[in-house]
Length: 331
Image (cartoon, rainbow, N blue to C red; front, side, top):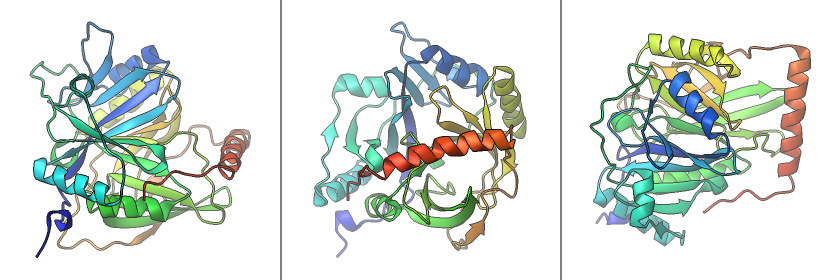
């Protein structure tokens, strides 16, 4: 007999919100509202939060020194799904903290349950999101959310197998595919995991030849998906006009076919804005391996030897520091 803990919850989990900690609140306001085109919530308390759809809050920026994404909210379809996840966490002795009413209001949800996830990234589980009927005022026509969630996160890891196990054992994540990419003499292996019809909600990148992590932040990039090609191109132009640096100009990925660009956020990690990513057909999909992160494009705006040297030296220094550190894993 199948018990609650054994019930498969694939398709009942999606990304709900992201929380960023930064001292650069003014810059984040301009970047997300005027650059990427999200709706800026009007707050009498000075709280910085943004909408993409009917959810009251999708991205929140809190004042603090981390200059990083500090929490990701994951929306579960119903109480039964939440019960499955909480039972699996308890079975693995992973500590869970229940939110207060005030904390839930800050997140724009009825209640959430918080855990320390892989690489120390806080994960917040919730069922009910507060809705807003205030008309959206966005420079974008809209974003692809709904049952697929608000986007995906990409994370670099020194413990990719453990990280993959976490998402598969707790959320029934399915393998979409792999990408191998050689960068500066190192092979980067990227594993793409889906929690619903979105090609991936989590991407895990690891260096093959030596186990190091060249990325300072817990999340390498956050992806959002625009509704139209015009939205994508207009946001690319606006971000450039506002002075934000492109990490990778517009290109297309080989696995999910998404057109996208990567722009460096005010906190230093990247935001990928994409368009027209495919939805996985569960009846026919077969995982495969792609060689190269892009079919075309995604070139850095300054491909000079001097710029590449400075970038690689910075990444190497960060990577060497991680050799002396232990990466947290909850399982």
